[in-house]
Length: 162
Image (cartoon, rainbow, N blue to C red; front, side, top):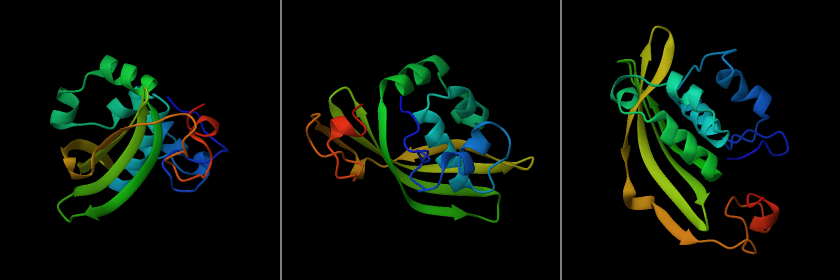
């Protein structure tokens, strides 16, 4: 689980958390695009806010969601970086966001690559599923004295390894 560093949003938008994902996660605003929803869900995972994750799901994704497992996992991992590769909204009320997310689990740096699918329903976007794209997945050992994989040029122990 992460904390908010320097006020910056965990979604890597380079914006302040209070003016980026926080209004969505707290319910003050609804996401206007699938990318905004995906970024806010990433931020919620970094904060282990599984209630928000669940509220933003529909369909098969929600039916198969294991809330307690997700909460344990989110608290255990340390999220490092989010990279949005593509974001598309179709006229059919569907949207797609392809992304890569890096995180540390124990002493292993890992990365997931997914193309997520969203639907627009009753004035809101919802996550309905995703296709795992293993081509960019990584898993490697990381030590506290290595440079942090977030790109800060600081040692991991002084950055995301705290």
